[in-house]
Amino acid sequence: VLTTERLILRPWRDADVAPVTAMFADPTVMRYFLGTRDAAYSEKWVAGVRAHFDRTGFGIWAVEAPGVASFMGFAGLSTVPNTMPACPGVEIVWTLAEAYWRRGYATEAARAALADGFRRLGLDEIVAFTATVNTPSRGVMAKIGMRRDEREDFSHPRIPKGHELGPHVLYRAAANPARIRP
Ligand SMILES: CC(C)(COP(=O)(O)OP(=O)(O)OC[C@H]1O[C@@H](n2cnc3c(N)ncnc32)[C@H](O)[C@@H]1OP(=O)(O)O)[C@@H](O)C(=O)NCCC(=O)NCCS
Image (cartoon, rainbow, N blue to C red; front, side, top):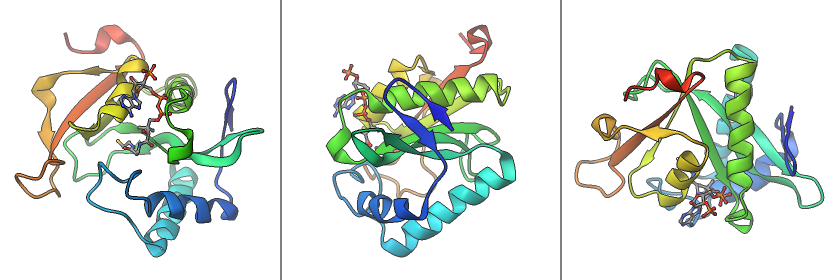
């Protein structure tokens, strides 16, 4: 469990499945993904996140804001899938329910997850990637000090050529910033 000024990043509870299912079914939340997801996907996704924690000792936390929401979304670290160019590596991810956007929550959660990755897990580097057009997510990446090298931009391997969500940007954060390529 990680705590910040306003948030608790905690393990998943069965009660989180319903609100995360609602998030994955919300077209506004899923604007920068190929589409919304159904309940079966969401349930499997949560099980996968829990299994990742058991396997590796790290993962994507449920985000709670005491007095505000017992579940507002998720943030944390995950192993980069082997279909992505940044593999092997560890990525940082975040998604919040729309009601909680633009209040600095994603930035606050991401800073805690990044610090945990560098201090507790001893990672040298953490990456993040998103569709080039995903301005909100790129805003979080920039705000937590991650850096993009446009030479590392890539096309998402599973998004059809010509689709507006195909072009992706890659951001990096290093435990020792001097390690990031100039
Ligand atoms: C991406 C997301 C988690 C951001 O959450 P958030 O809590 O609203 O982000 P923050 O309030 O910490 O914002 C950090 C910075 O990002 C940028 N930003 C966030 N939302 C933005 C928006 N709608 N438009 C433009 N810039 C935005 C801003 O630079 C902001 O800093 P500022 O508020 O000081 O100007 C949220 O928009 C979300 O869940 N989106 C849908 C899912 C998604 O795309 N996830 C990422 C997949 S890679």
